Length: 115
Image 1 (cartoon, one colour):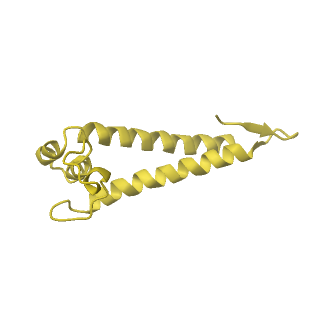
Image 2 (tube, rainbow, N blue to C red):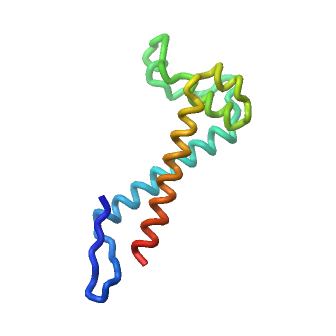
Image 3 (cartoon, helix red, strand yellow):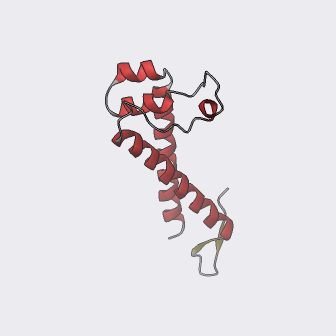
């Protein structure tokens, strides 16, 4: 929740809790944009390092495997390959883009609020 304390002259001033929330939202925004940029700028073909915990412990099936590949294929304009990699890649990308939009709107709100 955003909290604003006002000085006697009416100017808005952020309290420490609001400052921490703002920082955490900017960090989240950076992570999401950085991740999408990484998926958009790299090719998923060939061998690569996997951060999948299921694969690391030797389990044969992971419900999320292929999601990153699917989003990367989408960002490269390859819808058929994306669907083959993971059918939920389209909704995942839409959810991420929506979250990025929410975080950007929050940044604009904070700037207006603290002026």
